[in-house]
Length: 117
Length: 111
Image 1 (tube, each protein chain N blue to C red):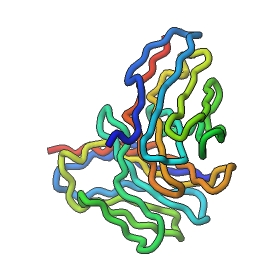
Image 2: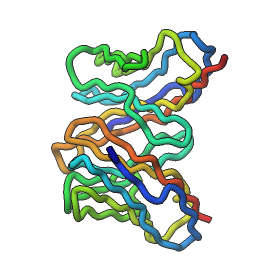
Image 3: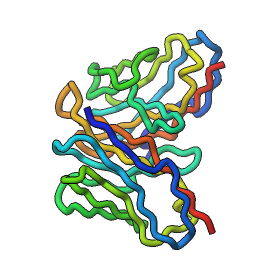
């Protein structure tokens, strides 16, 4: 079974500094990878996804993640963070269900990003 | 666009009570799922469904029942609430192999 490890439970950073949120998953079989963001008292929103093709994927608000198959990693980066990026970030990987044909999402424990002025 | 709608947003139950958390989606997705979110544990899958009449257990199914009579609705039933079921519950829907769309969550407290 798949598992997802987010290596940092909390990451404090100053505004305009770069940040990296780390994510490793367990299985080397073909997977889809996602980063979701959760703002306080809200549901989860998709930030970016890797399904196939280019291993570097980007979001519209400046985040990017690189799929590294050999290291089974999908780290999230942003070169310059804003106060508004303060949120919890979840890495997720797909796993084929017993019923076949559909992938269920396996989530990491989350990383709380706190951006300070 | 409604997307995924969960009701209620907040609920307090007494130990032993039963209730149903409602989830509806208007995107015609076949795949729907229920997660619970607890501090430091991320989201854990309770039950999922791949279409009307087809459901299966996830990682933490004990104490919960589901059914899927229509494509749109996927209710989650707590049979006899326990304090350990205090959590935030999220419903999600997705097309096959695609991203999941989440509802806003139901914050449940069992006293």
